[in-house]
Image 1: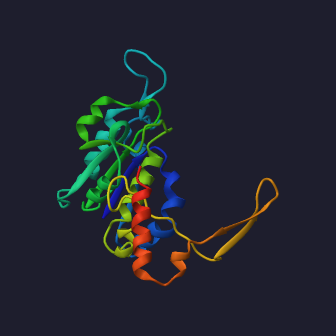
Image 2: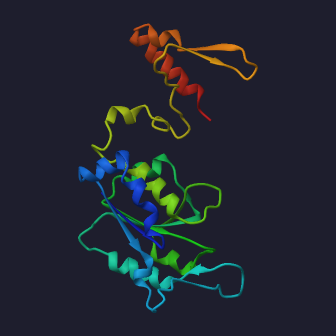
Length: 226
């Protein structure tokens, strides 16, 4: 799978994309991530990609021209299954089902908004607008990282398939994963009132009874729905 990200802050992505699962997926050539500086498609000597909004109003708007030229440059007839997505608070909300659907594409192109917004004519140049939640961010770079991370996990061979089966949202949209524990069996700590308290691992997880453990996990899956 190939990700192409169009942004005016290309340096933002470097460290995160070179860490952990995303780094390994790239090293194994299961995915590739290409960062493109939108200013490369500006036409003036100042590399201008934004301007004031028609009709007045605060802030600056990303221009349609540079985005059009960037998308035209990235267009490839050899890629049959791709999605071009604009990251926008007006977009459809991103969730695990969408991540799974997108993991089946050959390429995802992500256009990162900034400032006060993006010229509305860009809507006609993309397949869809996507939002990662009902809150305001400074730009589309963080949502792009969220989407690349979430989608990459579902690309075949990136993560063990058995691990994915019991993840949050894997059984249903509102189903969260059961609680997890590791050593020590008993954790002793001092509370705010200076009293010693003990936190124990549920006995069933220590029993070795795989049938009861499976039952316990299933019950906790159900209890954690929201």
